[in-house]
Length: 248
Ligand code: KIV
Image (tube, rainbow, N blue to C red; front, side, top):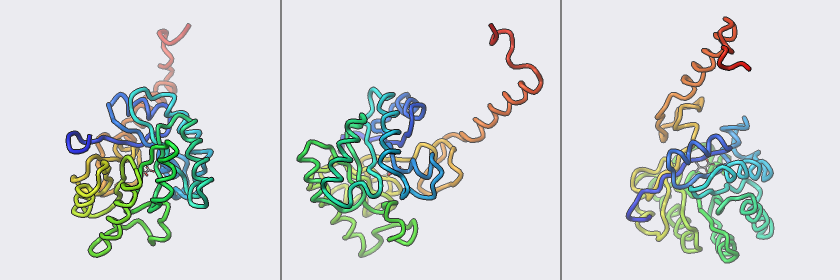
């Protein structure tokens, strides 16, 4: 799709969110480790375990028929050794993912995984698993630091990544990387010059408690859903629900 069609990507974490993503016609569903803060109530992605990721990947994969499903390798599942990484990636594929994503500059690891037949999506810029190393959520690659991000992106692309997430990097840097690598770049907070975009499901649909500059709310989901539940609560309390049509 590079150069001809924008790639539309979104996260999903279970059967219901995957079903909605498929109905909307997205190209790629990422079972992101944002699962941790978005769904499981953790403060960051760091506590997310491989088992948790696999459990949610299975739910998404069972529901998806058309979109490419990518499993996000959680913190600690690939940094220690090639063996760990291979085993974890294989577990994602057995869980129904078509490929995996991993954060950071690990070109040698990506090369080995690709050699083993595992499609790998790279991820550079503000990689949330390194939030403490970055000292918080900050735009990465401003000014001269841009070369470091671009080098990491090129290294991952040359190692065989099938695509690259660019997170929270200046739009001009993302556009430069996009023109320098052969694989599609997928931006989040990286401007319009990327080959595609990815967003967190709950941020797009108004289900997140925070508003982020790089996200746009397309539906006030929290309000709509709470209104629906309030109507249900009122009807139960007033004895209107269930009606005869809901009874046997
Ligand atoms: O975990 C995640 O949701 C992500 C993206 C949004 C890129 O890594």
